Image (cartoon, rainbow, N blue to C red):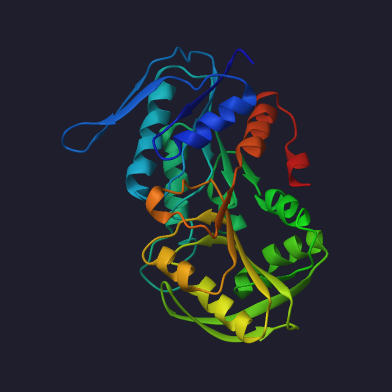
Length: 311
């Protein structure tokens, strides 16, 4: 893999290093810093002419800094004559605004997709988009990985029975696929959201029995308001253990305090977003995506199918 090189921005450097360890290569050398006025400065220190380059960067908080950072890195690589540039986005920010639910609002998912194309990216590798149709917003190929196999392995090793709970109607398909692989039943939460980041649990659709173990399965946890409301509703039904599973632990606002006080036995997330020191709790378990992302990068480099990673 002499023509393969992986670079990293500042948002998720550890995951990039772990990916390189799996690939048995060194992380590419680049200086990514800021000028005194806050502008981002990038200098690629390795020769990338004719190389197949992958840039690992989650557009997580601080979202705007991390987004602009990877766009500038891509521009620098393009001008340095890289043969192909793949933006590896373990977490794709601005994905929640993927349609116009009311007049005079933007579709930021499409806007950001356009920015990557204009910057010079040739391909996108992403983990668990908030909505699958966002793939269609890009005018370049998109490889959409799922963290689901990592979670399936983790819970199968527990050798317990579960009921999988979709926290809203939009997450039913995702939760159903997960439940099928665990050979578990499915329940759905009927939720009403009066305003952003505020949710109210109406009722549970499906049979939830006492002394069951429940898994609340979602793609991301932001303020954890919905998650905690669902957990409380399940506890009132007599559920024994409550696990929460999410690919992306955004954990903004009062999320940590909410999770700490909620009847959740364990929150299982991945390292698509780094868990900083102030957000660590004993009940939070982090699973790594390094092996799956490394295998996907290797298969893209050799022009092989990555569909095997979905099994």
